[in-house]
Length: 385
Image (cartoon, rainbow, N blue to C red; front, top):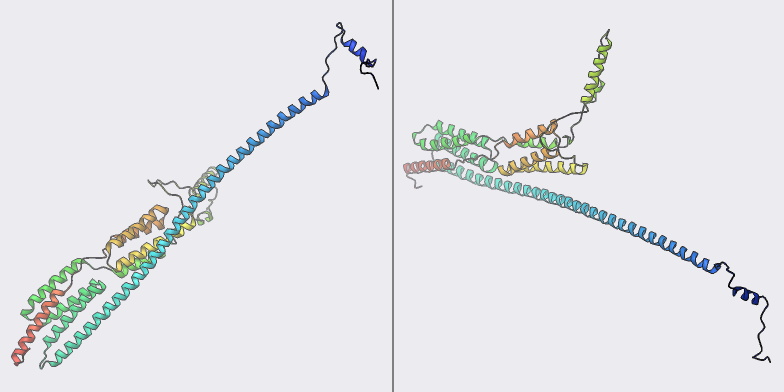
């Protein structure tokens, strides 16, 4: 065992070093340890990595914000496109429904007119049967009575033309024929009947004659030409460039230069046209909307045809005005479009529903005259009417 109070042995190398360090006259430079140097380098590296990561985070945040803004713009544009597409689909469905309803109404009107015509024909057949029985029951039938029956029949046919077909031309011809028949009878007591007939004929003449067949065919021809109207006016004709120039003999250099200048100017004029339309010109429609517009134009013309047959002057005019406005708005001012607009304006000036009269007063007066004659004839024969 060692003694705890025994002096500890010191190494000889440590004592000089300690003594040297304790000497006041000696100054030694301080030397940094490797551990301190490593700590400083690690701290600088951490700061660099922190700045790098901060830059990366800011860059990622900027890219994310830009992507989010772009995505919102694309979403908004897609919503606008979907809204427009939905509106076009709704308009197309509405037009198809309108066209289907229009076809159903036309068929219904045709069926009702056929039923009305058949009912009128049945009534006329019954009346003719009654007339035949009445004529056979008479013991003595003279020529004047036959003429009166013929005039009454012609007046009823004229009323039928006006009521069912709105045909003033044929009705006027039938009324004039009835007046000729009454004139051939040559009786003074028929003057009141002829006076009423002359007044109704005059009113019908003043109303004018409507050429429904001609107007209907003009609308149909215009509808067939809708697809041939160009939306953009062609600039020039290719044949203008294929015409060979006639070069005169002994042409001088000045004449050649002048001829070439005017030839180049002529070719340039086929490509460049300056026009002052006096109004704003819309952009050319895309092909899908061009087909949609052409279909609407044909539908307006068909609607005008139906209004013509049904004597609806307001619908007829409004349909033509709407078609004219569409051509002025969406078509270029070319020759075909101008011709179509002029034809629509001419059709608007046509009178399609004039105020027509009927021959009910004359028919009633003539029927009373015939009944009065029959009563007189029966009284003369001693037969009670």
